[in-house]
Image (tube, rainbow, N blue to C red; front, side):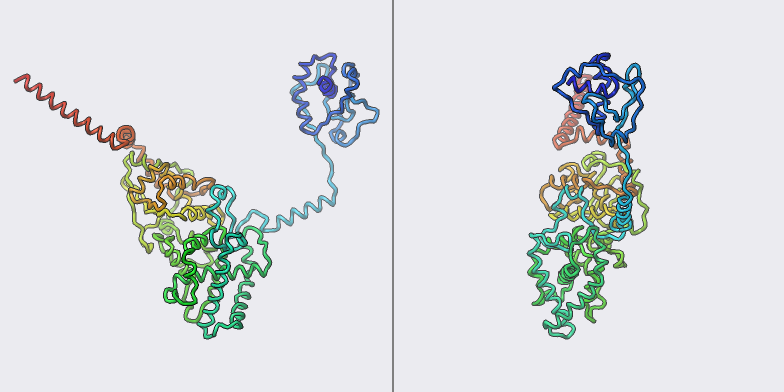
Length: 557
């Protein structure tokens, strides 16, 4: 250890004979540590000659400071001793009293790069900058992977369980069972199209019909690939086949539940999928399990026969979703144009627009947001909850149309089933992406419900009021669902849909009368037994007062 300290001391111009060991340690501690971290290497210590550590080292009175570049590139002279100060080491000029501990020197090297390497690196960087998919601009993308921070909270909510749509989950083992149904459905679809056009459904006719599909979708291949935010590792033939098979599968399954007149045809295989229907419709609405809507529209137009020219795919999809109870109580939006919607989940997001947004209401600013209390505390503050029935055809308020009037929160009923969490998580994940254009009413609804629900007591209260229809059975599960639904979710930076409502509720709770009533209910009326005890005490006090009056009157008589 002494030899190491001596070498470091010599490097900084100290004479070990003139400076005691503690002073050397205090002065050199930071400098030696810093030099070690920045790449400085000490010469080897010759343990065979310990006497060399104790001898004085002659130092020149005036020593120039060598350059850092010399320190890193120039080798030490061959005649230099293992304990001599390196001639080309970067060091300060020692003063008469030793170097100041407040002055430190950073050892680094600076050289020149070969011109060919500079050119090569510049070209590579320019190619990345000029490639739209490499720059953080997502304007051309419409189908994204779920952000990793959301996926790790509950990965199962974003994974398909029965069927893969598109390239992201294609080829997974547990999804292969549905592939044979896709091909069977496509075959029956082509036969039905040919027969309705007057053909017999033979092999040649099927081949000709398939050729029309391939030509039409092949022309859209490049546009379809550009919809995905990650490179698709499929050959052109595989990609076009996937678009045709998956797109026809979705359209035909939807048609079989909308076209009532033809629902029970003998060649209609949709009844084979009855048990999987609910989960299949769930898989259709996953963020990563999407096809570009323009591909589905092109396929749908190819399927039309002259008597079906007025059929609208958007209307078929929304009707199908109502069969699945996904759009019950949401306003029917007329005139949604196909170019506005990028895929099925995007269509849901357009269809779900709250009525107040449709009326052009100006949303509150995010910086005005102050959270509200949970449901049980709001009840204690004198706020009442009222269920609002949403009209099945969307002519009434939507699920997001929550109002505060005269000390009463009016909230439409929310049905919570097995797949509700998955659906809400995918809608919220969609709103985290640039495609949502900062319209985050589902995220804002989640923030509101998270404020209202802190524990199972809040869930029980909302269930009693009819605001939550709990089809899971466990109140604690629902409380956990809403408490975790917002993990790693970034709210809109501009607007908050319930800003005005939060302000009204907080203003009501801040009134002194309501504060006192909330404290009274919380401290003394927090259980039925406490209420019974209170009224028993009041009755006892009343009868005691009456007895006192009668006693006084009897005394004066």
